[in-house]
Image 1: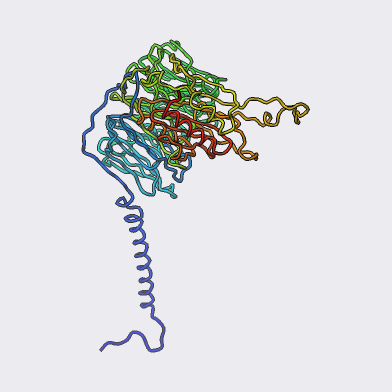
Image 2: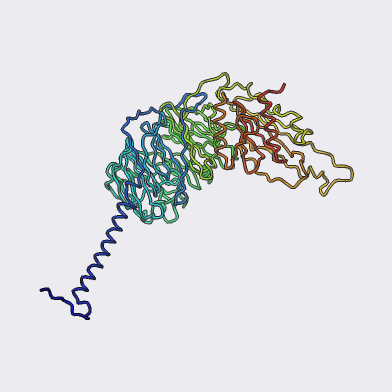
Length: 640
């Protein structure tokens, strides 16, 4: 017989209440456990967050050899879109060439390609996370990720550089002074450098296992710069890091293998400097000077000035005992620069010369490659100068366009395996932009000079012969003054004008009608309209209220390039439109390709076979299109 523990009409006994409480606690623990398991194995699980490919294919190492002097051709090229993650300012794309591979680093993650062919080898990225830093030493890469919207969730991932295999993962620290423009932080001797939350400590972790090998406290009152453009750099045997020491900056050089301080120098500004390391030389630029230190930390060259390097580090290379640096002298105009060679052992200047504002330098053996944003004033391609250690220069066009004012990637050069690698920013795809990586090889020579890409100077048409008087009459500019402008590249002078400006003739005011300023109203309102001679920035003029079909205020026709063949001209025109914030394709102008550049239709870039021409006519509306159509007709059938 079973007897009830509860009398009819009575409340719950303590035993029942205990069971109820135990059930509630058990349920709460179950829910909490499920939440933890879901967070760990679902929300933060590697299996769905990580996009990871690996390779077992061997890679062929490359020698330190670039292409020979002469015309250049594209071996392969790729674009990488910029990644605008939740952390402002970390939207750059950066590159390096090592061990026969090209590494592309961006907020999306790492992508590694075969340096000879451009074929994909391996990649690593994390969905919902942004890569804010990476380092490289020997055959190891380390990537640093932060979870979008949860900056406290951070992770280091150690990777084998050749296969892409994951070696280790760690949480809890930060990269040591990662660059905002290249996302890279120092590593060397198989050790990657990290820091604590307060940035008062410098740690060395094994790039192979992630284990901490050493730790060093920074000098009292000092901490590492955070979020700076380029506050550190490193090689296998030495790492240099800028320190913020209570309003004064310092430069600390350490041995990455042991953490031992090799030297420590005070700088002249409280702002974060730009730091660049070459083999045995450290360059530091702040708003007071550009300084060069040898491997022992002794300064051997100083260039004083607050804007020598602009917004980026002055490019420099080391050729034996010779440091070659490009900078902008104080008071120089936008197209003026200087290049100097300084002996490291003595500090003596060996040579100096005027130079364009080089965007990047690269060395291969005794040869230095220098990237100039414009081959020459008024022409479209970027240029490559080959600088000999004695100061001699040979110039050749690059098969791409470069606007150094665009963001997304700092212009970059590297030479290896007989190829020259160049990275330049693009505005397309709009609005985010991208970085274009181009691998260049030596191209076929032609009947003309290397400065023209092998094209004979006689093949360049006369810019003033591309429009007839009847063509100009259609925009009411039959009565005009012609202003031709010739072009030259180095010692090569083109035989015909490359730019032709058509301006309306000034009219004498009628007797007794002088207007408010004593001049013809048309003359007062006259605005000379020209294309930007150093790039395509046109189409930004707003039309004024005027009578129907007014006379054109001015027209400019510019021959921006003559390529060896139509295919290479097409690639160059595509590179041009990709650097423009606004570009619209036109298919009704009679040429092979055409784009309207800018917010209005006043500037048109046109390709006819191997010729690239820019027509600039801001008003009246449609004038640029009419004249571009006429130019296309005359290039298809040259006028007699």
